[in-house]
Image (cartoon, rainbow, N blue to C red; front, side):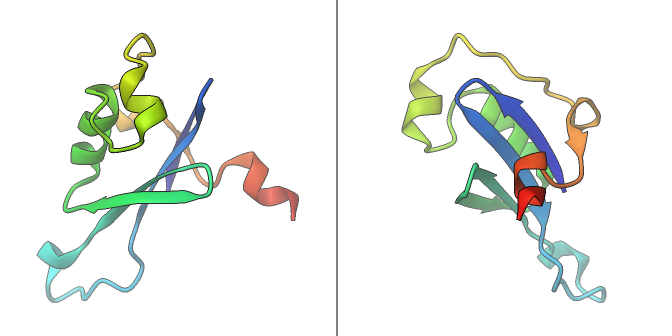
Length: 87
């Protein structure tokens, strides 16, 4: 799992844990913001491209094109967002 905090909310990308190792093409990556899942992708980089291009389907994010985010997932935080650990 990777996450990135922005002034509009925290994006996260997580791989499904139930993928069949014999069918690696079936692995899905889920993109979400805060506590909402937005959509799934076949590749984590596709999700990041939608975030960078402001084409996620999350209206508040997509209309505010002034905010820029790293296009390389290695510049995101690995692991769960801190707010999720407060339970």
